Image (cartoon, rainbow, N blue to C red):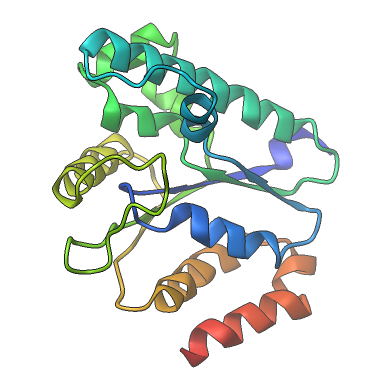
Length: 210
């Protein structure tokens, strides 16, 4: 299979939006043609990379995350069975966390906005819940308050604003309702064998029944 046939889809949003949980559910409903990539930031920080507030440290971590994301995507390109790659965040998520300007982020990573936008066929942006709407710290990598998560969510959205195919998934009282909206957003991109599979249809019925 040629790399140009691959569709890379970003699942993004502010901390606590439910991205990783959605992808974990999806992992059990897809065939081998759908590759799900882990979050580069979790690999970096979970592996012990210093997480500090100084601008220089934040810049260093975002450069590291960017390059790990690029290499994760390259691994997916080398998978002969892959047709769709679902990414837990994409390269431009770093714009939301970068302490300087967007231009500085792109320059320090040796890339351009157009190049990064072209990496992905579509972007699905999940909004995080408010403080009284279910926001939690169950993920040990999540250190932000609800207010900080909302501010990051806004900056991340600004980073992807020029992508031609962005779908926003608003927060819902029940997680299964949010999952349903993500299922709908993903359906058109799924390979036929996945979109028509019993598991996928069961997932759709489950979410619609909630």
